[in-house]
Amino acid sequence: MFEFLIFAFVTAITPGPNNSMLMASGIKFGRKASIPHFLGIWFGFTFLFLIGGFLLSFIPNEVFQYIQYFGYLVIIYIAYKISITKTSSEENSGLQKPLTFIQGCLFQWINPKGIVMAVSGLTAFRLTSVEGALIYFAVLPFCVGIWLILGENLQDWLINNSSSGFYYGGIFISWERAVYIFLGLSMVGSLLLA
Image (cartoon, rainbow, N blue to C red; front, side):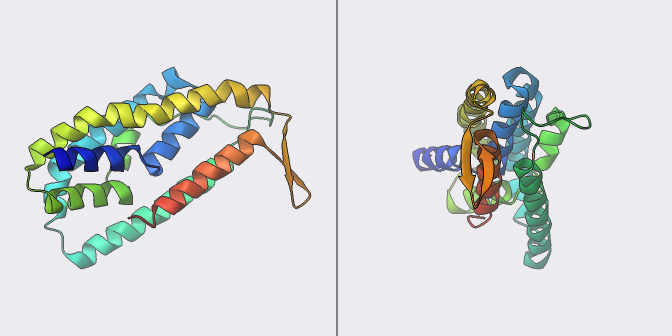
């Protein structure tokens, strides 16, 4: 079981769609407004592991591949939306708000990294889905919370330095824009692990 604890910790703390989205939410909206999203990830993934990991192992490989491809498209779309998020120095158009608890929960069912974590966790280690879910329930708040707090801590620095950045190919890129682009790229990069 200790080996699975290490597996759970490493898979939960490394960059992926949940962590990138939560960090972007922390930057854009702050910690308090992003708490429902955080809770949605925490409870949603635990439920996915508890129920979904067991059920997904019975889905035929062909159907599972379509679910993964759909998840890839959703992740690429969300990564694009994160990378073009309006910075604090740009004019806000439209209502922007963080994900809700329900949206955070439902996202787990199309998150390719999360699905792979659930299926591989149940098949590679000799433990029940209840034991695995309890371990993830214990490690997720710390692992995912770090990304939210990091985002919130970056928020003030990025806002205070909104006029500074660097030039790339003759185009000025603010530090805030660079962080959003990096988060989007890390989401797409996490698909290589799935």
